[in-house]
Image 1 (tube, helix red, strand yellow):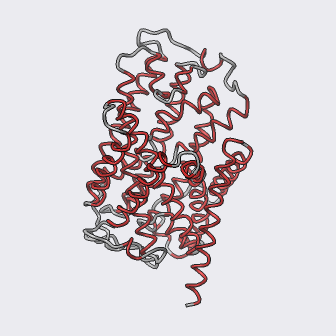
Image 2 (cartoon, one colour):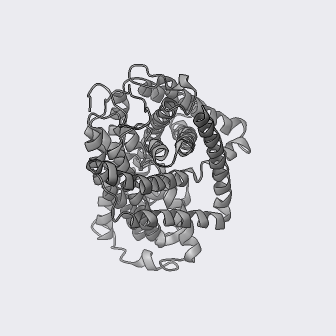
Length: 465
């Protein structure tokens, strides 16, 4: 592998061959960890706990197992075929150009809308600290900063994400340590025992419906793991880098998520109103319940950093995905132009789209903005489905044609791959059953079908030429 450019995999589509490798192993390792640690864990998990009660532990364990399988499959393909288009390239290789088109542009759309949502969340916190500056101006400032980091050398993105992720990981580790000490009654408090786990209605106070609601919420809280395989293509040693990052990140992510839920529901009653307070969330509510000084402010700073980190990572991921798609003939060529080893036009396009989503939250909050929110609701599941289907097909080809590329292997292939696909199908069915998620499934399904039709038509036209 050349150290001056990232080469596309042999016999793969031309995947942005002039991107410069500026990411180091420490960057990849922290991107893998920090990519899935966002405001969804720090704040959004409180709503899931209110729905599922203590059984949220089981919900996060189940969804975490599914995510670990998806990450392992993605790691296998990324180590064998490192490419900045990640699963989009794998889908194109395994299923066909229409699949790469569908998975890639759906993911780009998801990331751009997420950039806007994270900008709104961070601006609300900043506006609370400095009320004189309007929220939209805060968002513009954040967009400007992270567009700047992403249009320059990739190592700047890597450094930002490294320190952002380090702070998030440190906060979770500190929370877990404090939680274990509190559970043991070593912080001057009485040890809670199993009172909060089995009291207040029992382990599953809202029955299976509550567990299902918690499961659906937890599945989407894990989104973000894909970024490390996108970033690996711009590292000095992509194969070794992604293999190590995937192996070390999976169990840590499960520990952070499931461990955090154990601490929260063991220390604070699941019915506590502070858990669903959007200005607090599960971490702040728990620390304040323990009467720890300045807990609210400290965790609000951590949430603020988590939102900024997600903005930075999503602008990066969106730009690389768009650049890869265009390099493979799946979009306007101008978007994929490389300047200084960076697809700068793709960065600008992704950031502008994200900012437009922010403006729509002010201009059209009740129709267009709500449509955007509902449309991205199940996109990550669509992406995971393409990952599993691609791995199922590519693994056979790798074993037959290039077994030496299987640096990372999916466990118990093909059985666990089928288990993962079955798990995704179950989640789709559960979403269709729940009134609160049914619309999200329909809107996301509609976008996926439209992209698939466009991709298939493009493929057939290209085949006729």
